[in-house]
Length: 152
Image (cartoon, rainbow, N blue to C red; front, side):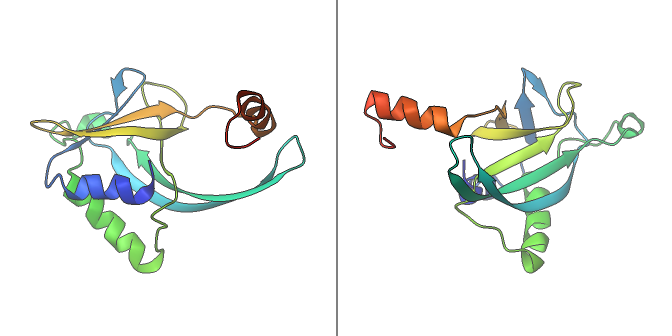
């Protein structure tokens, strides 16, 4: 999901709390949007082809002292967006860049997650996440070439 689509889906949701979900678990209530990153990649794959692209990373943090504030709920979408609005005053985000979440979820080490869906429910907005995976662009090109795909 790109950055504009993600943020637009949150803007339509009003004050509902954001519940991030991956591995069949949710990020605990009381998390904080601690950093927004406009990331640039410059790479060369194993087939010697150069690539350049950007992403937006939203880093979510759960304080180790979270259990001391059990009354804190999941962050409302409007608060998440207020932070984004402040960020964009000094660091404009690229709307077409893929949006990704960086977080520790379900006791796993911090990782990047792709946003697969944003669903407004009765009392919350569920943000479904899939963990990042390794890729081989050269192999992907070969598969596309053999299958008549667009990248042959």
